[in-house]
Image (cartoon, rainbow, N blue to C red; front, side, top):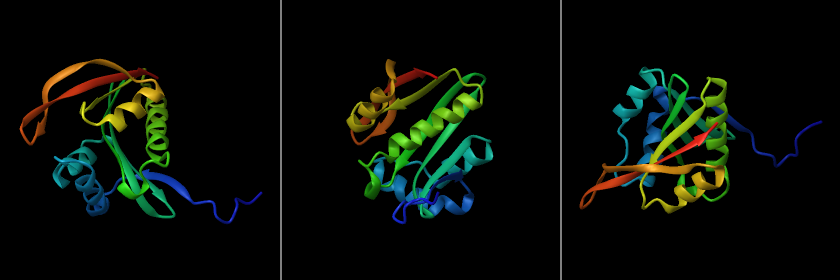
Amino acid sequence: MNAPLNQPNVSFREMQIDDLDAVIQIETVNFPFPWTAGNFKDSINSGHICLVLEIDELMIGYAILMMVLDEAHLLNISISADWKGKGWGRHLLNHMMQISREQGGLNMFLEVRPSNVSAITLYESIGFNEMGVRPGYYPAHNGRENAVLMGVAL
């Protein structure tokens, strides 16, 4: 059976160094203090799970996952502003959770700015719970901003 003609081709693939211009473009629009190309290169070179989400070969998002024994730590996840609010962030996060399970992960953790209400709402809807606060974790325009530490059993 063939897919409908208007069905987009959705795929995940490993992030490559050549992807960093597109990744940085999304990153700088979405975050007030974005990761640098060097941060992404370090993650790729460290062997972290670095994936991009593409629709019809257009990169619309990416995620960086670090596995430490049976713990998965989501370091970064983002969807292009043009594609937000359409369920793609949930799709990418669910995919990263599945990869974590396949890698032997029992729990996933992440940090999020308390001011990022849409991300917190998404995480909570998938089952993440607040586990604590990391004081002064993020740079902010007026000093530092705390991070909410969230986790979910996989």
